[in-house]
Length: 142
Image 1 (cartoon, rainbow, N blue to C red):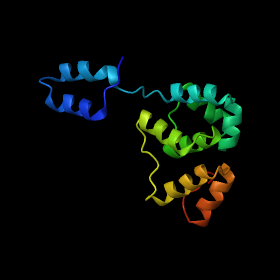
Image 2: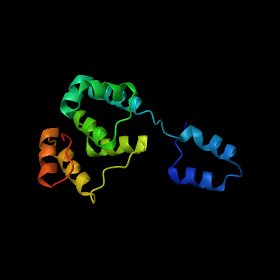
Image 3: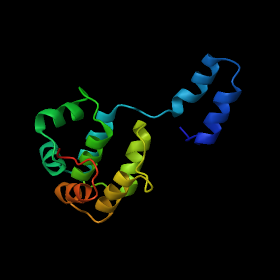
Image 4: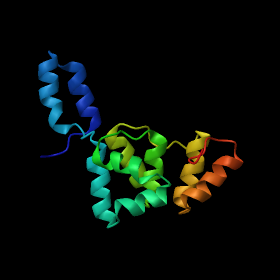
């Protein structure tokens, strides 16, 4: 199926005669909000185990496995940590966030700016946490 751009979908929703017709026209183009599907596809793409990702992300296996299994929805900060554990690029991270409905990393937000720096410079979660701490921002490891 051919992709339909966001502006066309928005136009369809705004000009629909009924909710049913709007949904039937736009539904084939909506994103899958099942975070577990995206996380597990990244595991395959990066050829890395869940346990290694969680270790690199500084997340306990008990909690992390619940994110990967879809039993719990990770808060944005934990999902950032997981993307760091997966060694995703900034573009891959923002694409993932967009696909699942999370706010993309925004350079004007101080916390996000530190994360962007860390991701683009391939820093570990611990090194990023140190930078967050130095800036007086919320750290991953509280």
